[in-house]
Amino acid sequence: MTDVHDRETRSYNMSRVKGKDTKPEMMVRKYLFANGFRYRLHDKKLPGKPDIVLAKYNTIIFVHGCFWHGHEGCKYYTIPKTRTDCWTEKIEKNKYLYKINEDKLIEMGYRVITIWECDIKINKKGTTLNNLLSLFG
Image (cartoon, rainbow, N blue to C red):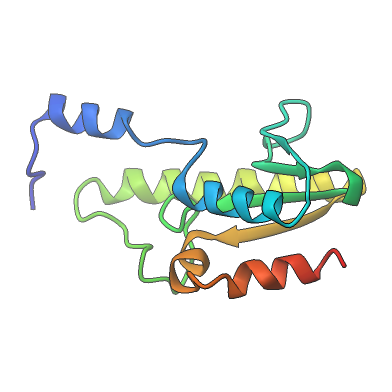
């Protein structure tokens, strides 16, 4: 199956995919702030530039998109039908780099929490985020 867009249109669409301030990330940040947590964002000094750093609790939070981080068994994670090898390689590299960075952060003494995009979408009432809050108190 060929792509429905020409090369320039596809390039433009992909350039609009955000890496920071995504909707799931914003939901987690608003929830944390509303519950009294203060944090830093995308700290370049730490491995993997974590999405949220809760220094007081020595905790790192990554908010992962199911597609980009290869969330196995998730309905939002499907490999595209075109350029399958390229996409598989990219997603596997993302997973590998995340694991390396997670190990480094744990060695540095941080607790690492990963929140998946689908958990936030499915539990809009905040049950996943309430579970997150229980980790700190």
